[in-house]
Amino acid sequence: MDKYAGNSLTAGALRYRSESPKKAGGWLGSGSRQMETGIEFLLKLSAFIGILAIILISLFIFAQGVPLIFKIGWLDFIFSLKWSPSQGSYGIGAMLVGTLVLTISSLAWAVPLGISTAVFMAEIAPARIGSILGRMIELLAGIPSVVFGFFGLIIVVPFIRNYLGGNGMSVLAGAIILGIMILPTIISISRDSILAVPKEYKEGSLALGATHMQSIKGVILPAAKSGIITAVILGMGRAIGETMAVVMVTGNSTMIPGSMLDPLRTMTSNIVLEMGYAAGDHQAALFATGAVLFVFIVILNLVVSLSIKEGKNYAE
Amino acid sequence: MFIEARKIISLLIAGIMLLATIMVAGCGNTEEIKEPGNENTQELSGKLTIAGSTSVQPFSEVLAEEFMLINPQADISVQGGGSSQGVKAAISGVADIGAASRELKEEEMTENPDLLVARIAMDGVAVVVHPSNSVQDISQEEVKNIYAGNIKNWKELGGVDAAITVVSREDGSGTRDAFVSVVMDEEDIVASAIIQNSNGAVKTAVVGDPNAIGYVSLAVVDSDIKALNIEGAAPSVENIKAGTYKISRSFNYITKGEPTGLTQAFIEFVLSEEGQGIIVEEGAISVK
Image (cartoon, rainbow over all chains, first blue to last red; front, side, top):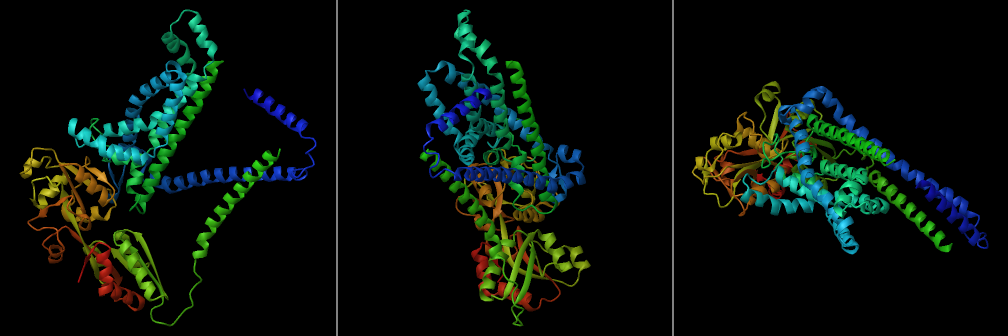
Protein backbone atom coordinates (compact mmCIF):
# COMPACT_ATOMS: atom_id res chain seq x y z
CA MET A 1 0.00 0.00 0.00
CA ASP A 2 2.75 2.43 0.97
CA LYS A 3 4.63 1.68 -2.24
CA TYR A 4 1.66 2.63 -4.37
CA ALA A 5 1.12 5.80 -2.45
CA GLY A 6 4.77 6.67 -2.96
CA ASN A 7 4.54 6.01 -6.69
CA SER A 8 1.47 8.10 -7.22
CA LEU A 9 3.05 10.95 -5.33
CA THR A 10 6.16 10.79 -7.51
CA ALA A 11 3.97 10.65 -10.58
CA GLY A 12 2.09 13.69 -9.40
CA ALA A 13 5.27 15.53 -8.71
CA LEU A 14 6.60 14.68 -12.17
CA ARG A 15 3.44 15.82 -13.83
CA TYR A 16 3.52 18.98 -11.78
CA ARG A 17 6.97 19.76 -13.06
CA SER A 18 6.30 18.87 -16.65
CA GLU A 19 3.10 20.87 -16.79
CA SER A 20 4.41 24.07 -15.35
CA PRO A 21 7.83 24.81 -16.74
CA LYS A 22 6.89 28.24 -17.96
CA LYS A 23 5.65 29.26 -14.53
CA ALA A 24 8.75 28.03 -12.75
CA GLY A 25 10.17 31.52 -12.62
CA GLY A 26 6.87 33.03 -11.49
CA TRP A 27 6.12 34.66 -8.21
CA LEU A 28 6.51 31.44 -6.30
CA GLY A 29 9.84 30.90 -8.11
CA SER A 30 12.99 31.26 -6.09
CA GLY A 31 11.10 31.90 -2.85
CA SER A 32 9.51 28.48 -2.90
CA ARG A 33 12.47 26.78 -1.33
CA GLN A 34 12.54 29.18 1.58
CA MET A 35 8.83 28.82 1.97
CA GLU A 36 9.24 25.07 2.08
CA THR A 37 11.85 25.30 4.81
CA GLY A 38 9.57 27.68 6.64
CA ILE A 39 6.63 25.30 6.49
CA GLU A 40 8.84 22.44 7.53
CA PHE A 41 9.95 24.45 10.53
CA LEU A 42 6.37 25.25 11.46
CA LEU A 43 5.40 21.59 11.22
CA LYS A 44 8.37 20.57 13.35
CA LEU A 45 7.46 23.24 15.89
CA SER A 46 3.83 22.06 16.13
CA ALA A 47 4.93 18.46 16.59
CA PHE A 48 7.41 19.56 19.23
CA ILE A 49 4.79 21.59 21.15
CA GLY A 50 2.31 18.72 21.03
CA ILE A 51 4.80 16.16 22.30
CA LEU A 52 6.18 18.53 24.92
CA ALA A 53 2.65 19.10 26.27
CA ILE A 54 2.06 15.37 26.59
CA ILE A 55 5.39 14.78 28.32
CA LEU A 56 4.88 17.68 30.74
CA ILE A 57 1.36 16.60 31.66
CA SER A 58 2.43 13.00 32.31
CA LEU A 59 5.42 14.12 34.34
CA PHE A 60 3.22 16.41 36.38
CA ILE A 61 0.59 13.74 37.08
CA PHE A 62 3.21 11.27 38.26
CA ALA A 63 5.21 13.83 40.22
CA GLN A 64 2.06 14.85 42.08
CA GLY A 65 0.56 11.42 42.60
CA VAL A 66 3.35 8.87 42.95
CA PRO A 67 4.81 10.13 46.27
CA LEU A 68 1.41 9.62 47.93
CA ILE A 69 1.05 6.13 46.43
CA PHE A 70 4.35 5.17 48.04
CA LYS A 71 3.52 6.92 51.30
CA ILE A 72 0.40 4.81 51.63
CA GLY A 73 1.85 1.74 50.01
CA TRP A 74 0.78 0.98 46.45
CA LEU A 75 -1.02 -2.23 47.40
CA ASP A 76 -3.11 -0.36 49.97
CA PHE A 77 -3.79 2.47 47.58
CA ILE A 78 -4.95 0.26 44.73
CA PHE A 79 -6.78 -2.44 46.65
CA SER A 80 -8.08 -0.87 49.86
CA LEU A 81 -11.82 -0.25 49.71
CA LYS A 82 -11.96 2.60 52.19
CA TRP A 83 -11.89 6.04 50.61
CA SER A 84 -12.22 8.74 53.23
CA PRO A 85 -9.60 11.42 52.65
CA SER A 86 -10.77 13.53 55.60
CA GLN A 87 -9.85 10.61 57.87
CA GLY A 88 -6.68 9.80 55.98
CA SER A 89 -7.91 6.66 54.21
CA TYR A 90 -7.00 6.57 50.58
CA GLY A 91 -8.06 3.36 48.88
CA ILE A 92 -9.28 3.36 45.30
CA GLY A 93 -10.13 -0.36 45.21
CA ALA A 94 -13.84 0.25 44.95
CA MET A 95 -13.32 2.69 42.10
CA LEU A 96 -10.96 0.38 40.25
CA VAL A 97 -13.62 -2.30 40.44
CA GLY A 98 -16.25 0.31 39.56
CA THR A 99 -14.40 1.31 36.40
CA LEU A 100 -14.01 -2.34 35.37
CA VAL A 101 -17.62 -3.27 36.15
CA LEU A 102 -19.05 -0.29 34.31
CA THR A 103 -16.78 -0.75 31.29
CA ILE A 104 -17.49 -4.46 30.99
CA SER A 105 -21.24 -4.08 31.43
CA SER A 106 -21.48 -1.34 28.82
CA LEU A 107 -19.33 -3.34 26.39
CA ALA A 108 -21.47 -6.41 27.07
CA TRP A 109 -24.40 -4.98 25.16
CA ALA A 110 -22.78 -2.34 22.96
CA VAL A 111 -20.29 -4.70 21.28
CA PRO A 112 -22.77 -7.31 19.96
CA LEU A 113 -25.21 -4.59 18.95
CA GLY A 114 -22.49 -2.45 17.38
CA ILE A 115 -20.94 -5.26 15.35
CA SER A 116 -24.37 -6.48 14.19
CA THR A 117 -25.23 -2.94 13.11
CA ALA A 118 -21.93 -2.67 11.27
CA VAL A 119 -22.56 -5.98 9.46
CA PHE A 120 -26.04 -4.81 8.53
CA MET A 121 -24.80 -1.49 7.21
CA ALA A 122 -21.89 -2.92 5.28
CA GLU A 123 -23.32 -6.19 3.97
CA ILE A 124 -27.09 -6.35 4.10
CA ALA A 125 -28.54 -2.88 3.74
CA PRO A 126 -28.58 -1.29 0.26
CA ALA A 127 -25.55 0.94 -0.16
CA ARG A 128 -27.62 4.12 -0.03
CA ILE A 129 -29.30 3.22 3.26
CA GLY A 130 -25.96 2.06 4.63
CA SER A 131 -24.43 5.46 3.97
CA ILE A 132 -27.43 7.32 5.43
CA LEU A 133 -27.11 5.19 8.57
CA GLY A 134 -23.40 5.95 8.60
CA ARG A 135 -24.13 9.67 8.63
CA MET A 136 -26.57 9.25 11.50
CA ILE A 137 -24.05 7.27 13.51
CA GLU A 138 -21.49 10.03 12.97
CA LEU A 139 -24.06 12.49 14.25
CA LEU A 140 -24.49 10.37 17.38
CA ALA A 141 -20.72 10.53 17.91
CA GLY A 142 -20.85 14.33 17.84
CA ILE A 143 -23.26 14.74 20.76
CA PRO A 144 -21.45 16.09 23.85
CA SER A 145 -21.26 13.67 26.74
CA VAL A 146 -23.04 16.00 29.15
CA VAL A 147 -26.13 15.74 26.92
CA PHE A 148 -26.06 11.95 27.25
CA GLY A 149 -25.64 12.37 30.99
CA PHE A 150 -28.57 14.72 31.21
CA PHE A 151 -30.71 12.36 29.15
CA GLY A 152 -29.69 9.56 31.51
CA LEU A 153 -30.49 11.61 34.61
CA ILE A 154 -33.91 12.73 33.37
CA ILE A 155 -35.07 9.62 31.47
CA VAL A 156 -33.06 6.50 32.34
CA VAL A 157 -32.59 7.01 36.09
CA PRO A 158 -36.30 7.62 36.89
CA PHE A 159 -37.25 4.74 34.58
CA ILE A 160 -35.02 2.33 36.48
CA ARG A 161 -36.23 3.67 39.84
CA ASN A 162 -39.89 3.29 38.90
CA TYR A 163 -39.81 -0.04 37.10
CA LEU A 164 -36.80 -1.97 38.35
CA GLY A 165 -36.26 -0.68 41.89
CA GLY A 166 -33.38 0.88 43.73
CA ASN A 167 -32.92 4.61 43.46
CA GLY A 168 -32.13 4.57 39.77
CA MET A 169 -28.59 5.91 39.99
CA SER A 170 -26.93 2.64 39.24
CA VAL A 171 -24.50 0.48 37.28
CA LEU A 172 -27.36 -0.23 34.88
CA ALA A 173 -28.03 3.45 34.14
CA GLY A 174 -24.32 4.01 33.60
CA ALA A 175 -24.00 0.96 31.37
CA ILE A 176 -26.95 2.05 29.22
CA ILE A 177 -25.67 5.59 28.73
CA LEU A 178 -22.05 4.57 28.28
CA GLY A 179 -23.07 1.85 25.82
CA ILE A 180 -24.91 4.38 23.68
CA MET A 181 -21.88 6.64 23.80
CA ILE A 182 -19.43 4.00 22.58
CA LEU A 183 -21.73 2.57 19.89
CA PRO A 184 -20.64 5.09 17.21
CA THR A 185 -16.96 4.19 17.73
CA ILE A 186 -17.64 0.48 17.53
CA ILE A 187 -20.02 0.71 14.58
CA SER A 188 -18.03 3.03 12.34
CA ILE A 189 -14.66 1.32 12.79
CA SER A 190 -16.17 -2.17 12.43
CA ARG A 191 -18.04 -1.07 9.34
CA ASP A 192 -14.91 0.38 7.76
CA SER A 193 -12.96 -2.78 8.42
CA ILE A 194 -15.76 -4.96 7.00
CA LEU A 195 -15.93 -2.78 3.90
CA ALA A 196 -12.14 -3.07 3.57
CA VAL A 197 -12.30 -6.88 3.17
CA PRO A 198 -11.37 -7.57 -0.49
CA LYS A 199 -14.42 -8.29 -2.63
CA GLU A 200 -12.75 -11.44 -3.96
CA TYR A 201 -13.00 -13.14 -0.55
CA LYS A 202 -16.77 -12.81 -0.55
CA GLU A 203 -17.08 -13.72 -4.23
CA GLY A 204 -14.92 -16.78 -3.69
CA SER A 205 -17.00 -17.88 -0.73
CA LEU A 206 -20.27 -17.40 -2.62
CA ALA A 207 -18.82 -19.22 -5.64
CA LEU A 208 -18.03 -22.20 -3.43
CA GLY A 209 -21.72 -22.45 -2.59
CA ALA A 210 -21.82 -20.71 0.79
CA THR A 211 -24.90 -18.59 1.54
CA HIS A 212 -24.56 -14.88 2.26
CA MET A 213 -24.83 -15.43 6.02
CA GLN A 214 -22.28 -18.25 5.91
CA SER A 215 -19.91 -15.97 4.00
CA ILE A 216 -20.35 -13.20 6.56
CA LYS A 217 -19.75 -15.54 9.46
CA GLY A 218 -17.02 -17.71 7.93
CA VAL A 219 -15.11 -15.33 5.69
CA ILE A 220 -15.86 -11.64 6.08
CA LEU A 221 -15.90 -11.31 9.87
CA PRO A 222 -12.70 -13.35 10.36
CA ALA A 223 -11.00 -11.27 7.67
CA ALA A 224 -12.11 -8.05 9.37
CA LYS A 225 -11.16 -9.38 12.78
CA SER A 226 -8.27 -7.05 13.57
CA GLY A 227 -10.34 -3.99 12.66
CA ILE A 228 -13.22 -5.15 14.82
CA ILE A 229 -10.90 -5.80 17.76
CA THR A 230 -9.52 -2.31 17.34
CA ALA A 231 -13.08 -0.96 17.33
CA VAL A 232 -13.88 -2.75 20.57
CA ILE A 233 -10.70 -1.61 22.28
CA LEU A 234 -11.15 2.00 21.19
CA GLY A 235 -14.73 1.82 22.49
CA MET A 236 -13.38 0.44 25.74
CA GLY A 237 -10.91 3.33 25.94
CA ARG A 238 -13.71 5.80 25.58
CA ALA A 239 -15.77 3.97 28.21
CA ILE A 240 -12.91 4.02 30.72
CA GLY A 241 -12.18 7.69 30.13
CA GLU A 242 -15.75 8.99 30.07
CA THR A 243 -16.53 11.13 33.09
CA MET A 244 -19.30 13.68 32.86
CA ALA A 245 -22.15 11.39 31.87
CA VAL A 246 -20.99 8.74 34.32
CA VAL A 247 -20.86 11.15 37.27
CA MET A 248 -24.42 12.21 36.52
CA VAL A 249 -26.06 8.78 36.46
CA THR A 250 -24.06 6.32 38.57
CA GLY A 251 -24.54 7.77 42.07
CA ASN A 252 -20.80 7.81 42.91
CA SER A 253 -20.93 5.72 46.10
CA THR A 254 -17.54 4.47 47.22
CA MET A 255 -18.46 0.81 47.38
CA ILE A 256 -18.29 -2.24 45.19
CA PRO A 257 -21.76 -2.61 43.64
CA GLY A 258 -23.58 -5.78 44.68
CA SER A 259 -26.05 -5.71 41.81
CA MET A 260 -26.76 -3.84 38.60
CA LEU A 261 -29.10 -1.57 40.56
CA ASP A 262 -26.44 -0.43 43.03
CA PRO A 263 -24.50 2.80 42.61
CA LEU A 264 -20.79 2.84 41.90
CA ARG A 265 -17.91 5.28 41.43
CA THR A 266 -15.29 5.15 38.69
CA MET A 267 -11.75 6.50 38.88
CA THR A 268 -12.52 9.39 36.54
CA SER A 269 -15.63 10.27 38.58
CA ASN A 270 -13.54 10.30 41.73
CA ILE A 271 -11.23 12.95 40.29
CA VAL A 272 -13.96 15.22 38.98
CA LEU A 273 -16.15 14.88 42.09
CA GLU A 274 -13.57 15.82 44.65
CA MET A 275 -11.12 18.11 42.87
CA GLY A 276 -13.08 21.21 43.93
CA TYR A 277 -12.11 21.20 47.59
CA ALA A 278 -9.18 18.82 47.64
CA ALA A 279 -5.93 20.07 49.12
CA GLY A 280 -2.69 18.52 50.30
CA ASP A 281 -2.71 14.72 50.46
CA HIS A 282 -6.29 14.60 49.23
CA GLN A 283 -5.31 16.42 46.06
CA ALA A 284 -2.26 14.20 45.66
CA ALA A 285 -4.55 11.18 46.00
CA LEU A 286 -6.64 12.45 43.10
CA PHE A 287 -3.51 12.86 40.98
CA ALA A 288 -2.52 9.35 42.04
CA THR A 289 -5.92 8.13 40.83
CA GLY A 290 -5.11 9.83 37.54
CA ALA A 291 -1.72 8.11 37.44
CA VAL A 292 -3.30 4.68 37.96
CA LEU A 293 -5.78 5.49 35.19
CA PHE A 294 -2.90 6.60 32.98
CA VAL A 295 -1.10 3.29 33.45
CA PHE A 296 -4.39 1.50 32.78
CA ILE A 297 -4.79 3.27 29.45
CA VAL A 298 -1.16 2.81 28.42
CA ILE A 299 -1.65 -0.92 28.93
CA LEU A 300 -4.79 -0.73 26.83
CA ASN A 301 -2.95 1.05 24.00
CA LEU A 302 -0.24 -1.61 24.08
CA VAL A 303 -2.95 -4.23 23.70
CA VAL A 304 -4.33 -2.32 20.70
CA SER A 305 -1.01 -2.14 18.90
CA LEU A 306 -0.26 -5.79 19.70
CA SER A 307 -3.65 -6.92 18.45
CA ILE A 308 -3.21 -4.95 15.24
CA LYS A 309 0.20 -6.50 14.70
CA GLU A 310 -1.27 -9.90 15.30
CA GLY A 311 -4.05 -9.12 12.84
CA LYS A 312 -1.44 -8.29 10.20
CA ASN A 313 0.40 -11.54 10.80
CA TYR A 314 -2.93 -13.30 10.51
CA ALA A 315 -3.64 -11.62 7.17
CA GLU A 316 -0.29 -12.69 5.78
CA MET B 1 -0.18 26.30 -9.52
CA PHE B 2 -1.56 29.58 -8.27
CA ILE B 3 -4.15 27.68 -6.34
CA GLU B 4 -1.46 25.49 -4.82
CA ALA B 5 0.59 28.50 -3.80
CA ARG B 6 -2.41 30.23 -2.35
CA LYS B 7 -3.24 27.17 -0.32
CA ILE B 8 0.26 27.01 1.05
CA ILE B 9 0.29 30.70 1.88
CA SER B 10 -3.08 30.58 3.61
CA LEU B 11 -1.89 27.59 5.60
CA LEU B 12 1.22 29.48 6.57
CA ILE B 13 -0.80 32.51 7.62
CA ALA B 14 -3.13 30.34 9.64
CA GLY B 15 -0.13 28.76 11.34
CA ILE B 16 1.42 32.12 12.17
CA MET B 17 -1.87 33.43 13.50
CA LEU B 18 -2.23 30.37 15.70
CA LEU B 19 1.26 30.87 17.06
CA ALA B 20 0.59 34.55 17.61
CA THR B 21 -2.58 33.74 19.54
CA ILE B 22 -0.71 31.30 21.74
CA MET B 23 2.03 33.81 22.42
CA VAL B 24 -0.41 36.62 23.19
CA ALA B 25 -2.34 34.31 25.49
CA GLY B 26 0.92 33.36 27.17
CA CYS B 27 1.88 36.98 27.67
CA GLY B 28 -1.51 37.88 29.11
CA ASN B 29 -0.57 36.60 32.53
CA THR B 30 2.64 38.51 32.87
CA GLU B 31 0.89 41.79 32.17
CA GLU B 32 -1.23 41.39 35.27
CA ILE B 33 1.71 41.19 37.60
CA LYS B 34 1.82 44.48 39.40
CA GLU B 35 4.86 46.57 39.99
CA PRO B 36 5.86 46.30 43.62
CA GLY B 37 3.87 49.10 45.24
CA ASN B 38 5.60 52.12 46.67
CA GLU B 39 5.97 51.61 50.36
CA ASN B 40 3.51 54.16 51.61
CA THR B 41 3.32 55.23 55.20
CA GLN B 42 -0.45 55.56 54.85
CA GLU B 43 -2.32 53.44 57.35
CA LEU B 44 -4.20 51.10 55.00
CA SER B 45 -1.46 49.87 52.77
CA GLY B 46 0.64 46.80 52.68
CA LYS B 47 -0.03 43.12 52.31
CA LEU B 48 -2.57 40.93 54.04
CA THR B 49 -2.84 37.19 53.60
CA ILE B 50 -5.95 35.19 54.42
CA ALA B 51 -5.69 31.41 54.22
CA GLY B 52 -7.89 28.51 55.21
CA SER B 53 -11.36 27.14 54.75
CA THR B 54 -12.51 26.76 51.18
CA SER B 55 -16.07 27.52 52.33
CA VAL B 56 -15.01 30.92 53.63
CA GLN B 57 -12.75 31.56 50.66
CA PRO B 58 -15.41 32.85 48.22
CA PHE B 59 -16.70 35.26 50.90
CA SER B 60 -13.19 36.44 51.73
CA GLU B 61 -12.48 36.98 48.04
CA VAL B 62 -15.50 39.21 47.47
CA LEU B 63 -14.88 41.08 50.72
CA ALA B 64 -11.21 41.58 49.85
CA GLU B 65 -12.15 42.90 46.40
CA GLU B 66 -14.52 45.44 47.88
CA PHE B 67 -12.00 46.41 50.53
CA MET B 68 -9.29 46.94 47.93
CA LEU B 69 -11.63 49.15 45.90
CA ILE B 70 -11.94 51.42 48.90
CA ASN B 71 -8.29 51.12 49.88
CA PRO B 72 -6.32 50.77 46.67
CA GLN B 73 -3.02 50.68 48.55
CA ALA B 74 -3.94 47.47 50.33
CA ASP B 75 -3.02 44.16 48.75
CA ILE B 76 -5.04 41.25 50.13
CA SER B 77 -4.38 37.73 48.96
CA VAL B 78 -6.91 34.99 49.70
CA GLN B 79 -5.85 31.35 49.72
CA GLY B 80 -7.59 28.04 50.36
CA GLY B 81 -6.24 24.98 52.14
CA GLY B 82 -9.01 23.99 54.52
CA SER B 83 -9.99 25.06 58.03
CA SER B 84 -7.20 23.19 59.81
CA GLN B 85 -4.62 24.67 57.48
CA GLY B 86 -6.14 28.08 58.23
CA VAL B 87 -5.69 27.65 61.97
CA LYS B 88 -2.13 26.41 61.46
CA ALA B 89 -1.36 29.35 59.17
CA ALA B 90 -2.60 31.80 61.80
CA ILE B 91 -0.50 30.11 64.50
CA SER B 92 2.68 30.02 62.43
CA GLY B 93 2.16 33.51 61.03
CA VAL B 94 2.18 32.30 57.42
CA ALA B 95 -1.16 34.08 57.11
CA ASP B 96 -2.30 37.21 58.93
CA ILE B 97 -5.80 35.80 59.14
CA GLY B 98 -6.65 32.10 59.28
CA ALA B 99 -10.12 31.29 58.00
CA ALA B 100 -12.07 28.40 59.49
CA SER B 101 -15.60 27.20 58.85
CA ARG B 102 -15.69 25.61 62.31
CA GLU B 103 -14.99 26.55 65.90
CA LEU B 104 -11.50 26.18 67.30
CA LYS B 105 -10.81 22.75 68.70
CA GLU B 106 -9.96 22.53 72.35
CA GLU B 107 -6.37 21.44 71.83
CA GLU B 108 -5.86 24.30 69.38
CA MET B 109 -7.04 26.75 72.05
CA THR B 110 -5.05 25.29 74.95
CA GLU B 111 -1.86 25.06 72.91
CA ASN B 112 -2.26 28.60 71.59
CA PRO B 113 -4.07 30.70 74.17
CA ASP B 114 -3.34 33.90 72.24
CA LEU B 115 -5.54 32.95 69.27
CA LEU B 116 -8.47 35.30 68.77
CA VAL B 117 -11.61 34.31 66.95
CA ALA B 118 -13.81 36.79 65.09
CA ARG B 119 -17.03 35.25 63.85
CA ILE B 120 -17.81 36.90 60.52
CA ALA B 121 -20.82 34.91 59.29
CA MET B 122 -22.95 31.82 59.83
CA ASP B 123 -24.29 29.22 57.48
CA GLY B 124 -27.09 26.75 58.09
CA VAL B 125 -27.24 23.24 56.68
CA ALA B 126 -30.80 22.15 55.94
CA VAL B 127 -31.78 18.47 55.84
CA VAL B 128 -34.07 18.20 52.83
CA VAL B 129 -36.53 15.67 51.41
CA HIS B 130 -38.94 15.46 48.49
CA PRO B 131 -42.02 17.72 48.96
CA SER B 132 -44.31 14.67 48.80
CA ASN B 133 -42.60 13.11 51.83
CA SER B 134 -44.97 13.01 54.84
CA VAL B 135 -42.17 13.26 57.39
CA GLN B 136 -41.74 16.83 58.68
CA ASP B 137 -40.07 16.54 62.07
CA ILE B 138 -37.01 14.50 62.81
CA SER B 139 -34.49 14.30 65.62
CA GLN B 140 -30.78 14.80 65.19
CA GLU B 141 -30.25 11.22 66.37
CA GLU B 142 -32.53 9.98 63.59
CA VAL B 143 -30.66 11.99 60.97
CA LYS B 144 -27.45 10.43 62.22
CA ASN B 145 -28.90 6.94 62.07
CA ILE B 146 -30.14 7.49 58.52
CA TYR B 147 -26.70 8.63 57.39
CA ALA B 148 -24.95 5.88 59.33
CA GLY B 149 -27.15 3.33 57.57
CA ASN B 150 -29.04 2.18 60.69
CA ILE B 151 -32.43 3.53 59.63
CA LYS B 152 -33.11 2.29 56.13
CA ASN B 153 -36.86 2.75 55.60
CA TRP B 154 -39.14 5.78 55.84
CA LYS B 155 -41.74 3.77 57.74
CA GLU B 156 -39.38 3.67 60.74
CA LEU B 157 -39.91 7.43 60.88
CA GLY B 158 -43.65 7.29 60.33
CA GLY B 159 -43.49 7.75 56.58
CA VAL B 160 -44.33 5.45 53.69
CA ASP B 161 -42.88 1.96 53.36
CA ALA B 162 -39.99 2.80 51.04
CA ALA B 163 -36.21 2.51 51.24
CA ILE B 164 -34.44 5.76 52.02
CA THR B 165 -32.10 7.05 49.34
CA VAL B 166 -29.27 8.73 51.22
CA VAL B 167 -27.69 11.59 49.32
CA SER B 168 -24.46 13.11 50.60
CA ARG B 169 -21.69 15.44 49.50
CA GLU B 170 -18.18 14.51 48.43
CA ASP B 171 -15.37 14.30 50.93
CA GLY B 172 -13.70 17.69 51.40
CA SER B 173 -16.87 19.71 50.94
CA GLY B 174 -17.43 22.33 53.65
CA THR B 175 -21.13 21.53 53.84
CA ARG B 176 -20.28 17.90 54.48
CA ASP B 177 -17.73 18.92 57.11
CA ALA B 178 -20.34 20.97 58.95
CA PHE B 179 -22.94 18.21 58.69
CA VAL B 180 -20.55 15.49 59.84
CA SER B 181 -19.13 17.48 62.74
CA VAL B 182 -22.56 18.41 64.13
CA VAL B 183 -24.60 15.31 63.32
CA MET B 184 -22.44 12.27 62.76
CA ASP B 185 -20.59 12.14 66.08
CA GLU B 186 -17.53 10.25 64.79
CA GLU B 187 -19.63 7.77 62.79
CA ASP B 188 -18.98 7.24 59.08
CA ILE B 189 -21.52 8.07 56.42
CA VAL B 190 -22.77 4.81 54.93
CA ALA B 191 -20.75 3.74 51.85
CA SER B 192 -23.85 3.22 49.74
CA ALA B 193 -24.81 6.89 49.97
CA ILE B 194 -25.25 8.64 46.63
CA ILE B 195 -22.55 11.28 46.33
CA GLN B 196 -23.16 14.55 44.51
CA ASN B 197 -20.59 17.30 44.32
CA SER B 198 -22.58 20.50 44.70
CA ASN B 199 -25.54 21.88 46.61
CA GLY B 200 -27.39 22.11 43.31
CA ALA B 201 -26.71 18.48 42.39
CA VAL B 202 -27.90 17.26 45.82
CA LYS B 203 -31.05 19.31 45.35
CA THR B 204 -31.64 17.84 41.87
CA ALA B 205 -31.17 14.33 43.22
CA VAL B 206 -33.67 14.95 46.05
CA VAL B 207 -36.21 16.68 43.77
CA GLY B 208 -36.05 13.69 41.41
CA ASP B 209 -36.46 10.94 44.01
CA PRO B 210 -39.51 10.87 46.33
CA ASN B 211 -37.58 8.71 48.83
CA ALA B 212 -34.38 10.70 48.98
CA ILE B 213 -32.88 12.66 51.86
CA GLY B 214 -30.05 15.12 51.43
CA TYR B 215 -28.44 18.12 53.09
CA VAL B 216 -27.73 21.47 51.48
CA SER B 217 -26.67 24.94 52.46
CA LEU B 218 -29.66 26.92 53.73
CA ALA B 219 -29.29 29.42 50.88
CA VAL B 220 -30.27 26.72 48.36
CA VAL B 221 -33.56 25.69 49.96
CA ASP B 222 -36.67 26.73 48.02
CA SER B 223 -40.19 25.44 47.36
CA ASP B 224 -38.94 22.51 45.20
CA ILE B 225 -37.69 20.68 48.26
CA LYS B 226 -38.88 20.35 51.83
CA ALA B 227 -36.51 21.23 54.66
CA LEU B 228 -37.10 19.12 57.78
CA ASN B 229 -37.47 20.53 61.28
CA ILE B 230 -34.74 19.15 63.50
CA GLU B 231 -35.59 18.73 67.17
CA GLY B 232 -38.64 20.87 66.45
CA ALA B 233 -36.72 23.81 65.04
CA ALA B 234 -37.14 24.84 61.44
CA PRO B 235 -33.94 25.76 59.60
CA SER B 236 -34.38 29.51 59.53
CA VAL B 237 -32.04 32.45 59.98
CA GLU B 238 -33.71 33.29 63.32
CA ASN B 239 -33.42 29.75 64.71
CA ILE B 240 -29.81 29.49 63.64
CA LYS B 241 -28.96 32.81 65.29
CA ALA B 242 -30.85 31.77 68.42
CA GLY B 243 -29.02 28.44 68.44
CA THR B 244 -32.18 26.31 68.46
CA TYR B 245 -31.40 24.90 65.02
CA LYS B 246 -28.15 23.05 65.59
CA ILE B 247 -26.83 22.10 62.15
CA SER B 248 -25.00 25.27 61.36
CA ARG B 249 -21.47 26.46 61.23
CA SER B 250 -19.66 29.70 61.85
CA PHE B 251 -17.27 31.28 59.45
CA ASN B 252 -14.42 32.51 61.61
CA TYR B 253 -11.39 34.69 61.11
CA ILE B 254 -8.60 33.65 63.44
CA THR B 255 -5.71 35.91 64.35
CA LYS B 256 -2.74 35.41 66.61
CA GLY B 257 -3.15 38.09 69.21
CA GLU B 258 -5.08 41.31 68.87
CA PRO B 259 -5.22 42.29 65.19
CA THR B 260 -3.52 45.55 64.27
CA GLY B 261 -3.20 47.83 61.28
CA LEU B 262 -4.50 46.47 58.01
CA THR B 263 -5.70 43.22 59.58
CA GLN B 264 -7.76 45.09 62.14
CA ALA B 265 -9.16 47.43 59.47
CA PHE B 266 -10.16 44.53 57.27
CA ILE B 267 -11.91 42.63 60.07
CA GLU B 268 -13.71 45.83 61.06
CA PHE B 269 -14.81 46.27 57.44
CA VAL B 270 -16.11 42.69 57.32
CA LEU B 271 -18.10 43.21 60.52
CA SER B 272 -19.44 46.58 59.36
CA GLU B 273 -22.89 46.94 57.88
CA GLU B 274 -21.44 47.01 54.39
CA GLY B 275 -19.34 43.89 54.94
CA GLN B 276 -22.24 41.98 56.48
CA GLY B 277 -24.40 43.09 53.55
CA ILE B 278 -21.94 41.47 51.17
CA ILE B 279 -22.02 38.29 53.24
CA VAL B 280 -25.80 38.10 53.09
CA GLU B 281 -25.71 38.84 49.37
CA GLU B 282 -23.31 35.94 48.86
CA GLY B 283 -25.65 33.54 50.63
CA ALA B 284 -24.58 33.29 54.27
CA ILE B 285 -26.17 34.59 57.48
CA SER B 286 -25.08 37.86 59.02
CA VAL B 287 -23.74 37.73 62.58
CA LYS B 288 -25.35 41.05 63.44
